[in-house]
Image (cartoon, rainbow over all chains, first blue to last red; front, side, top):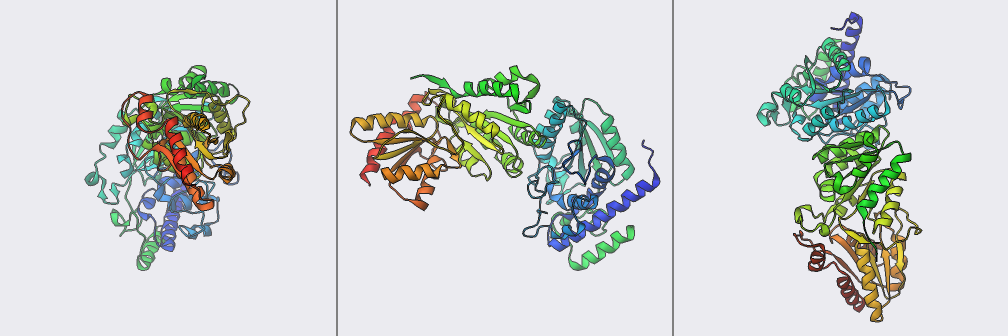
Length: 278
Length: 311
């Protein structure tokens, strides 16, 4: 759909790998964290923060900015990495993740790190928060949008469906939400733990505009965001099919890396693979 | 004595505030006729959003609206406002310190016929255990107006508790109201009766009957549970030397617990708590339930006599 400059796409892809590299380094320095889902959503994060969203790191509280809500708060490493690479904070601060006194809490905290629009971590609440932000924009006549990344396991939480009804009922077409459909959650495959499919049909039935994409294809991510902006009267849910642990061979499709960092040896291997991509 | 429903005062105050506070947005969960937010819905339809029977979404949506710069009031019955969505309040409202006002009606056993499922006796415990939360329990309709105005001006999460019934008007329009400040309704020197919500009226009734027996009771209206006005408690017990607390709530985690915690750490005195003694309620007329569960003026007076005997 979109006609993108090849260099821009290449740059975004390289940026996504840099974000992945940061995720590995941050979680290894912290000794804990959630690399799997951070890696699967890294391309979406990159597209949003470096191409799609309207924001200004030199003026973080700018009223006209788009808002980002990380509903799956455990993927904070990827969030912090794009904030740092955008210029909101020094990259060196990333290594303070999960350490005592750090602004980079294990899950994002609005009061600790002011660039975080909403504290998250307890799953299932981000879409509702997005509803509130989107409603505030409508009341103010603002054309700002709300971007929200949800996990796929998170779809098991009933509040998402309350939020889904609300957003459709009030015609919140200024919401672009993503389901990072990596098919894995802590206890295993989503379809074994508690099936969420047919997830696209469910969101369609709830009155949302639904787009299915390869969540690692930068052009498809950008196209989906454009399509969402052009969609009137309905919120948009992008079902982004992804691979958990994407970019690191031994982490890919491995539920064991949902909430566990690499060993020092694995870290060397992971960084080598990610540097090879760049 | 004049009787008025606090929730009517709440609805009217929202309408009045909404006229000049254009940032005021009100949410309800299919109970706007009962909570009286329906009055605001009628006056300012573009700033009222019914969330349906989905309280969890309502609370997190309220947080999002606050993040978008709005002054948000979210209302439903106390049992749903605090119990059904405690995690949403914790994670999306108090932890991120959002300017959301949760105003609950139908708290306590005087909900009556609906029975225990709807008689919330745990909300003060649930809300006061959350860091950053302010917890206000106005005693009557007149004080409700001032409490709603005060929380609208206060920056940060607030919980306001009201009942369903019409309750006696004890305060005057000219009486000062401040969040975190108790008021002395009657001076005395033998015992401090500290009440909250509609139990302040029971304390006043008890003080009258105690006076007839030569006992001078001081009555304090503890209209804020958190932050607790410890200075007023300390100064009262310094002269009376004993306390009875009274609340339409479980004795665990409510006014009595908070007052006891303060006194034990600073100036222990004989004390008794009037409240529901760790039970669920049941269906019945409000007056029948108050009598059965030990929440009337004579229960307060009897406790006062016992406590004075322990001095």
